[in-house]
Image (cartoon, rainbow, N blue to C red; front, side, top):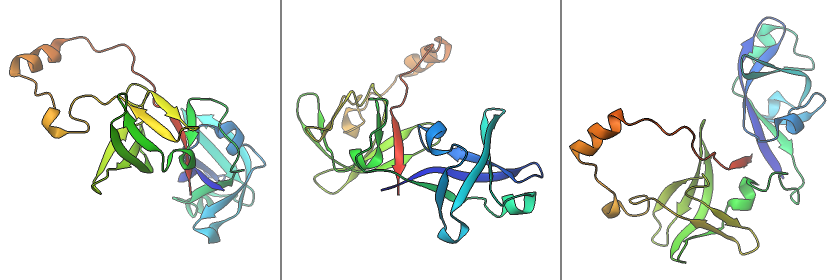
Length: 202
């Protein structure tokens, strides 16, 4: 099974380093020196990671055979793909690979059927579950523990606790002008529930 683990960004410096957009919760494993990765487009690879380091909060990689900025720029927007054993699961029990989540039945806490997970959308700050409803329509559910409190792989289901309006627009709460003004001066919460981690399948 193949997983997309990163996307190559801009060249960094003049010695062949590139920035990467990490798409795995295990970069220390998937993007370690010596790792050989397939690519999309395929003609660009395979690529072998020679060195890796963090600079200003971003991961920088250098690949074997890429020695200058021109070579690094030629790799821009290439997806890096790792081969993973289908039986392998993330070490963190709160993390899941895409293929583990796709096709899970989605139900509310009281057992009401919502639909089935069709795919996972990976956004920069949050993953979304794309859920296909019985009528063929789709809804997007943020993959955070507050809204998706339980993933039961044995039962092949995801339990959701949606806020009003997420599943049914008619239940959305409408804030009054007074509520809005209060919210504008109210202190923000100190922390939010972290998004559950996923790995992106190819």
